[in-house]
Amino acid sequence: MIERYTLPEMGNLWTEAYKFKTWLQVEIAVCEAQAELGYIPTAAVEQIKAKANFDPKRVLEIEAEVRHDIIAFLTNVNEYVGEAGRYIHLGLTSSDVVDTALAVQLVASLDILLRSLEELIDAIRQKAKEHRNTVMIGRSHGVHAEPMTFGFKLAGWLAEVLRHQERLKNVCKTIAVGKISGAVGTYANVEPRVEAIACQKLGLQPDTASTQVVSRDRHADFVQQLALLAASIERFSVEIRNLQRTDVLEVEEFFSKGQKGSSAMPHKRNPIRSERLTGMARIVRSHAGAALENVALWHERDISHSSVERVILPDACILTHFMLHEITDLVKNLLVYPENMERNLNCYGGVVFSQKVLLALVDKGLSREEAYAIVQQNAHTAWNKPEGNFRELIANDSRVTQQLSVAEIETCFDPQNHLRHLEEVYQRLGI
Image (cartoon, rainbow, N blue to C red):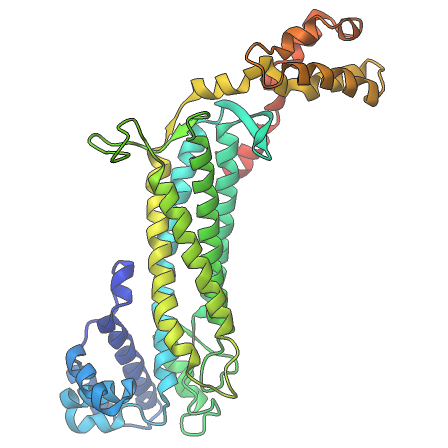
């Protein structure tokens, strides 16, 4: 008898042999259900369970002649089973087996993805703990904004992947459905009790109202969730790539001994893994569009979705799993340069503290417009000049010193003012 399901790595879940395993699981579960209800002999089911097997090469050989995958599969199984094989597939249509088995594959894939996502969650949380007080500049529009910490940046990543964890758990409920309801879903030749018992044995729920197929909105939801996860991995990767730029160099992908960055330029240390992940996200995202187009089938079924799913479902699962492995390893081994973060934070004499000076002047009674004009003039004088020093300009501007003491000006340039509420965010995330 064929071995029961175990948790292989993602690629093994999408082999022809594993697909045939799940098909046979479904057929046996249906036979067991029918025997429990007295429709077929228990002895015949025991014989089926003892003898049932298949040879993938033989199945393909038969399929080349009959041009029907399920018929080819059943023909090969019956070559092993013999007389009792006449009880296999009674009252069923091909999609009963294919769609129910596909649900088993997708649930197993989600098990692996959730396990890998947990590893990413742990890696981000650990790195965020390590750098919860590592001060850096926050950026908007790619331009220096105000101080934050690298740990806070990672806290945002952590919150995002935790949302993905919930989404994948929810989509597991959506996709974990089977249908054993016959040609157009009316149970004309197999009663609902058979479906209920068989699905329970397979760890699935019966579809609420199937046609000849399980409606493809479920599968589109599944692929869209993977595309959304891939988009987040892309966001993290693009951030790493930007922070690794030579003129920034606040973080860097780990560069191993003996690794080469360029065939022409020996100095190069390129963010190749982040770039690879960015490209892969585009592929997973494209599969979401194809999955949406699969929803609209003719009447109770056609097979326009089948050829698409043979490509996009294994590809999306395998790619997303690989991306999770890559980003987790990248985060764990990420090189972080606090000294460069401090250097970038303080360029042009701490011009990024402009809002604190603005608010301090407003607090002293100046109008916002007047205070803004004073601070902006000094900031733009210091901006993008090698000798520019906003802090000195502010300290020497009589319009400022008439309002603020030396100590009050110093306080405006203390980055800790920007960080005093971050502890609340860290506590929400268990960092």
